Amino acid sequence: MENALVDVSLDELDDLANSGLPFHHLRIRELDESLEEKDFQALASSVQTDSLAVSLRSLYFDLAPPSDSPSDHRTYDGLQTLIRLCGEKGIEVIFEERSSDSIDSYGSDEFCLRQRERQRATGEEV
Image (tube, rainbow, N blue to C red; front, side, top):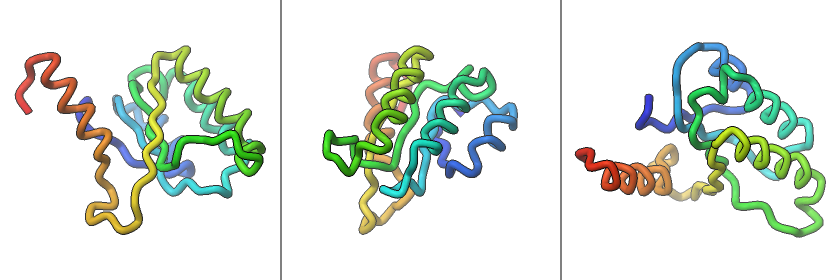
C-alpha cells in the first residue's frame, strides 16, 4: 500500500494499527473544531507504537493548518506534540482541508501531487 492514501476516522485508528497491514500514507478524516486535547493525545500514543509508526511516511489531516488564534489554543499543545513526535519518527504531517463542494470528497490533490513528484524523482511510471 505504498502508493495509497488510507482514509480512517480516529475511532478506526486502533483497528488499523493492529491489522498488521503496512501502509505509508494515512489521512485522519472527520476532524473538526470540536477536537480536544485527548484526541491528539490518543493519536500521539498511536504514532508512538511501533505497529503504526513502523511504515508510516505521511499523516494527512482533513483540517486547515492550525493558527495562533485563541480558538485553536485548547488543542494547540496537543497538536504541536503530535507534530514533534511525527518529526522524530520521520513522518511528515500535512494539513489539507477538503472542500465540501468537491466532486471527489475522498480524493486528495496534495497526495496526488506528491506521488507524481516522487515518481518523477525516482523515474517510476505514472
